[in-house]
Length: 270
Image 1 (cartoon, rainbow, N blue to C red):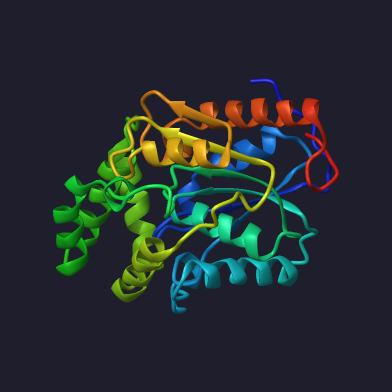
Image 2 (cartoon, rainbow, N blue to C red):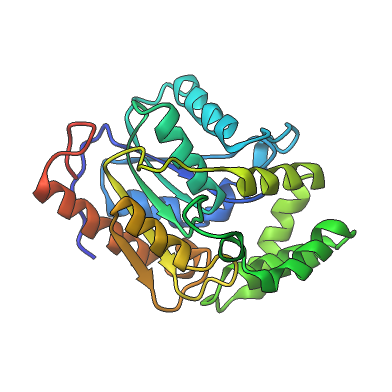
């Protein structure tokens, strides 16, 4: 993959989805930094997840976005930054760009689903309802939870046993309460995105094998917001985990196109 040179001031902020944390990115943050030399890569945990598991999850996506805005100042990160986010994290990225437009220069949204552009039965595939109800409504074991998450979110993993063991270790170190998980799930279900895109530089990525969210949600958003969309032919919901090389190649292609057509919102081009 050819790398695109970026200014040393460019910062990538990575946001995960429902109940997941920074460690669930695996080796992707390092790969992103290597693909775009000089860039800084920072993974934020949303309150209720990861190192912030002892805090209450914000009640809505807008409050999660405000938390990210506050963290940018707290960590003394120069704005605007680029955001790469998936699922619930991508909803937060949209709300963040809308509420604090000076914070975000560009964003990559992975396998997200937004009201009012897609119906509920595509935003969360109905075939998953019984399984999710069992997991959230009963005392499912940690192993049952992580096994289910792996099966729902990945398609191309070949070392699933080792992956589940790592995830189990992280879950036991920083358990996410069922209350916080439910708050995040309801926040995602209730969030309503703006009719118009909140910023000019957006890329959509989706996996055709996503068993959790119908990829037609990304397709509908691409049409309504007139955005570029790349669809992986076989990957699942967790695209960076299933095929990180493909994700990085698509980002590089998009940034190269942005550079040839004009500067980004931060006055720089990759």
